[in-house]
Amino acid sequence: MRQPLFCQQEQRLLVLLLLMLCTARLPNCSSSTVSSSGHESKVFCGGNPAAFLLRCPSMSPCSSSSDAAVATNAAQYRRDLTDGPHGSVYSDNSKRRSQNTRIWFLNLRDPEEPRPELFDVRWKDSEPKVEVLALKVSMTCVFAPDGTTEPATLLQVLPATIVQFLEHGKALVAYDDPLHSHRFLRRSVLGILQRVGSSGSGATTAGASTNNSTGSGNMIAVHAQPATDYVLGQILDASALIGAARVTVKGRPKKKGFEGVMQRHGFKGGPATHGSKHHRGPGSTGAGTDPGRVLPGTRMAGRDPKQTSTVRDLLLLGVNLKTNALLVKGAVPGHPGKTILKVQWDRARQQHLELRQRLAKVAAEDFLQQKKGRAT
Image (cartoon, rainbow, N blue to C red):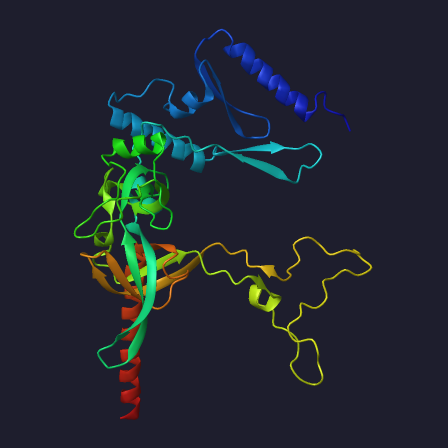
């Protein structure tokens, strides 16, 4: 059998060389040819490939001169490149002819083309959410309408002034900490407060004021979103929670000192009967022949490393704007009179919980009706 003069790869190189020689004299040209493998290939010269892909498929420029027509033609041409027969290029490997590698064209987009789909995106920074700072006063109990008692916690809101807006829906606020008094303020902190119209003394709200002997030199980041609903110098107090039904409380919990593995890590413990003397111990630490040592990170007894604790969806029983006081149902972390908490009102979460409660109520009523229908 007679062998061909040129192999397949050399034939391709020869075809590309002929195309380059034919188009070398033209400064701006575009041509299309079919290779020996039967796939269409485009050759362009002058300009970048991105501009070539964004232009009209015809040799002449677009007939319409308006921007809308140009954008429409460019978008249609990109769809043709992606969905058409030449939307993918197959490169055959001489060693593995049975497998093909598909390389897709990038979906290039004109920067000036409108993108209406972005208006339908729900950004987390746009969800209504606000946090206020409060001091845990004490626990008490309240009487429900049916005569039962419910545990409650009394919180004293600390007015905070917004001094700067941060990323991710947060704002930097300056507040008066009654636990750590500052006789003087740093000039850097005082300059920040003066820019937003605060003098640095105790902030006052409607009927409530803080100790004027301490300045608002303490700063912390809290949620205040969307940022368009707030301005620099605005005071966040108990009035920010008007209309809230449930709140989330975050704070530093009480420290228990040295804790065992059952309290610190939730170990089950050993058997309590049948002659066992190993009740609350950690058991083996795994230091056998292999690896012959205790691995780093092994859970053992010690101090609890948790720095913050969160209690979600607490019922807000009452708000007193005159005294800046809150009354929430249940217990919150921290020592009474020594812990500053973050009280967060997430409207989206509250609406979701209310919707779930309504759906559960409707489902229960339907179940009772079906049960009565079966009984009759």
